[in-house]
Image (cartoon, rainbow, N blue to C red; front, side, top):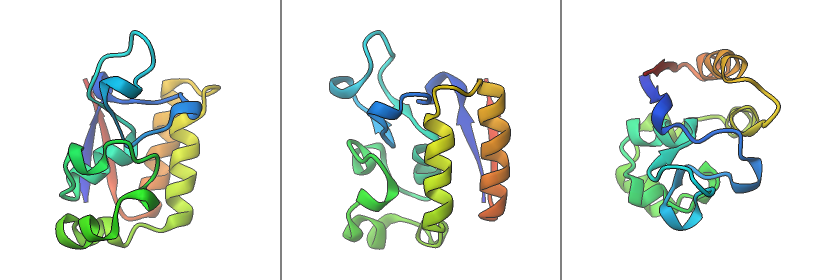
Length: 119
């Protein structure tokens, strides 16, 4: 699957407040609302809505009934080890955005997906 991450809506580098989708109540001060981590964008591309992934810190915490009823096989087949590696890279405060993007491109390609960063 090929999917896009809009940099203007990308939530990254905040390991202490990791989330697939950030709502106003959980956002870091002065951060815009409606931000997603890389896996949040992937979840949307796989058929899960923002409401379904809101307040979920990682894919494991998305309720099974939502996954079963709304998510594509791409979400269901994501290797848990790779998803943990993706979260670590996404939330690593010591990485530049350029390094983060390069590493995520490699990780998603290992999972058989193409992540594209835009805007």
